[in-house]
Length: 191
Image (cartoon, one colour):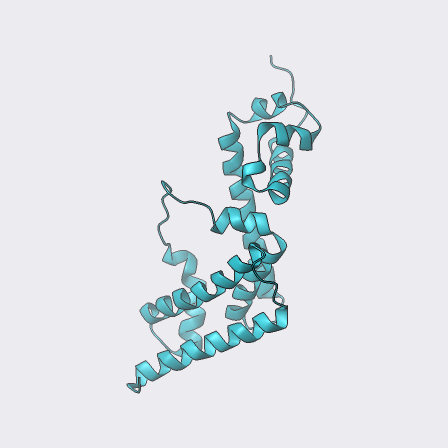
């Protein structure tokens, strides 16, 4: 019978998440993780087959953290729900730079990256309700605004810019209103 591991999978994943926060996914090595755990690498490989498995678990844990961040931002009532999702996305990029990069700025070559409209459904329903447009138009509205939000988040995560929250709030309102105006003009034939 093999000796009992002194760590659980969850403890190793939490430590790996901390390493990733500090050093990025490239810094998540067996040696770096062992140092974070104040251990040798042996207990890690008693729980995981390889570092690739650890990295997959870190991505899943980071995604759960991201989802929690978005839900909290949308539930706190500071902004209307649709805007709150964009603000929370940018805030996540600001507070969790390396996790943001891991989730939204890594090379996806070889990954299956299908869009899932079902995951977008709550956002699409908000847009359809707010603007009175159909699902297809809401989908393109969301994509166009998401490109803008993602750009701000990316520049924040890479320290390209350091805008205050009030400026970001105004910028998102302006982008939303501009797109709304264009979509309304198109639907009334005044484009």
